[in-house]
Image (cartoon, helix red, strand yellow):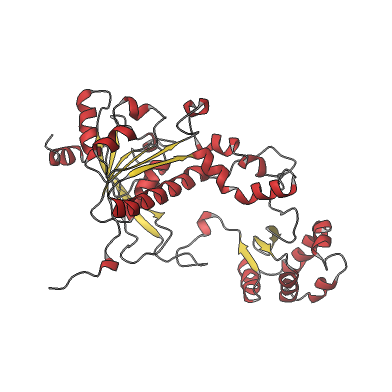
Length: 386
């Protein structure tokens, strides 16, 4: 009989996660823990996670739900009833990790707050996400991604200078908050292995959004100048995040150091640009950015985006093709060949969604099934002798 190498065992195998989650932040964190081997039990109301139906009417597995709930078991409990609360309490106290992103105070009123659960189960790791913290006047506000993007200063930096502030094109703060939450939970589990006690992981969308802009905050405090919206360009360097048109689309290029700019010019067959008085120094390139971009556009207009990027990459210059989602393919342009996994749902064919964005021994990116609402209620409660 052979024993399995410990490095090939999923790191969270044997652990149970109970999720009281809606929408993205807590469900996405729970799915990450599930991808790492944990058994994830999703507690839903009779109506189900609202993400099942956001912007979707075809079935109970809308895009948001399909993205963050594969491989979970769904248990329906009525937390407005005493029986439902007792069942939820027993299930939560049987878990290693509890995750929730309800409005602050909601689970406390239902007897499922962190203080009570950790008093009953000292080894429990309890993770919670709110919009604006658990205390203070702002804590009662609905905590959606867009509000955090606005309040954190993120929207003030995003978009063109002559247009209104623009949100990031997806729920970036929710996604970042889920990653912060899962990181905190993993850290608490490591500490539990040493001390034997769990702990509370408290995350707010506003803190995550502000923290994500640490570089902009540092620049602001060092210079005293308020960062402004400038579209794609970087105000103090050129070319940096500048968009250049090619024969079949667009690329973004970053070559603002003297060395990289010289390499860029040589790669496109115009080494004399590096000596042009307008472009020889970074300050001149910033001042003459429109002329610089016209020259670069003319030099690249006869090549495809892929050709330009290959050429620049071989010269050690940072560039990327601006692709639509239809253009992004597994196994191409550095995307892992197994990044996308199949997700199935009852009475629906499989779709492909991105999985864990990391490789870890003992963990495979696996296909998953979405749970029907309440599909596992009887199975899970029977194991608890309800």
